[in-house]
Amino acid sequence: MKKEPKKKNQIVQAADQLFKKFGIKKVTVEEICQEAGASKMTFYKYFANKIELVKYLWQQMTDDSMQKLDELDRRDIPFTEKIKVMLKMKEEATSQMGNQYIRDYLEIIPELHSFYNQIFSQVMVKFMDMIRRAQERGEVRKSMRPEFFLAVVRQLTELAKDEKLAAIYDNYTEFALEVNNFLYYGIMPAPESE
Image 1 (tube, one colour):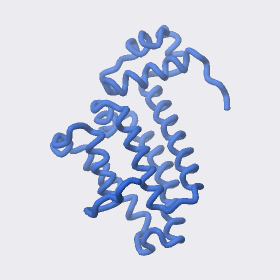
Image 2 (cartoon, rainbow, N blue to C red; image 1 turned 60 degrees about the vertical axis):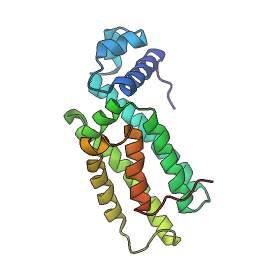
Image 3 (cartoon, rainbow, N blue to C red; image 1 turned 90 degrees about the vertical axis):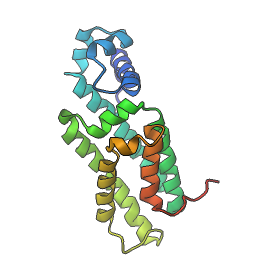
Image 4 (cartoon, rainbow, N blue to C red; image 1 turned 30 degrees about the horizontal axis):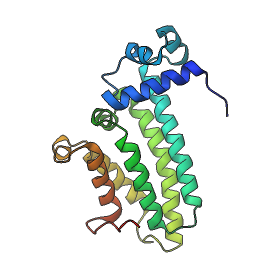
């Protein structure tokens, strides 16, 4: 794997921290440069604009998620345990993001919409393969079509954009976990963690 230039990494790390704290929309290129100790000229050497930087960050996040899903899929544990691990990973990732960043992520800035759909599809294809293998092992209902599951995920993502519903939770992490727990466990209690 090619090592990225130090200044580029500093810009990426600064942007990641600022986005998590203040959201994507509120953070400017100038603020990213100031936080990174880089000039705007250096910023534009690596990224055409802030949107391209967001795409870069989201692609890194997707690549990391794909790698973790591969590792998890190779583990010789029941699918229910894999779900618990995935929910824990989602909780950890979401808890690092501020509420505004999650709102910006869910609302999807128009310039990011097709890119979001592309990376979402990459992760879902991998997850659908995991579901199919779990069905073959009898760990997931064989009558459930993975495509139906994908449609439900998309609808729940839309539900997660409901500000009134989100407002009844202390934070977006709690709300996101509620959505994910409902997705995997329905109205039945989630299995107790060991």
